[in-house]
Length: 306
Image (cartoon, rainbow, N blue to C red; front, side, top):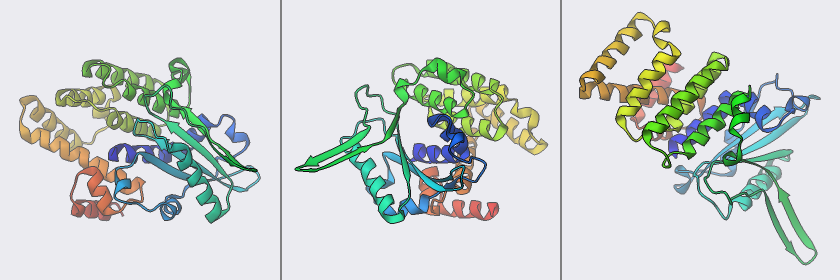
């Protein structure tokens, strides 16, 4: 869940405009998406400080500052349930986020809950209380990934539809074999590349697909990486140094040497660390824990990227 948390947060930032258009059709009539979308992670952290229990979270929370067509500042709270299990306190938690933000910053807020669980009955969308002549009725928008129509998602030209397809594939994990999961992931890659999305968005989507839906088999992980290279023609865009290193890694994997497998793991950790440093406001200690690297490595990476 630690890695899923970081993946969701990075993805929402990479595809912020597509994200809003997907969940709020015709949002362009209300918001000025040409203006910068700001992510208010520090504001959320002040209201909901991390605790030991929060370090391995059930939820991914993002607070977005956007602007309307007339230039008014608005806030959108995105609350994603990523654990895949039901929660009796979910509705109250949504209300808690809403009223704390309202009380602290006095901003209009749109609350959205994205449910990635497997339960067909877990469908929270409101919180209500009543006593004597006092009543409370809080309703929020909910999107259930399990309900999404596959055909509509595949036909959509919105990059975030591909994200939902990835999550649906992840929901099938455990119900199908690793080999069938491999076939589904490769099929998703091929369909994604046919969409001709801008390269940065393709890269973000492929990274999410690769890391969000994981294989149990080490052999399939390597096989998928190799096939992904072939499909995306990455070898044609490599520099000489990258090509030589890549060829050596392939030879090492083919010969079954432990050095090759270790180098691949280090490379993946390095890429994941770089993404966390550049795309999040996490501390060095938290990034080190998420990426399974030393804190000193994170500090060196941050210095190189600064």
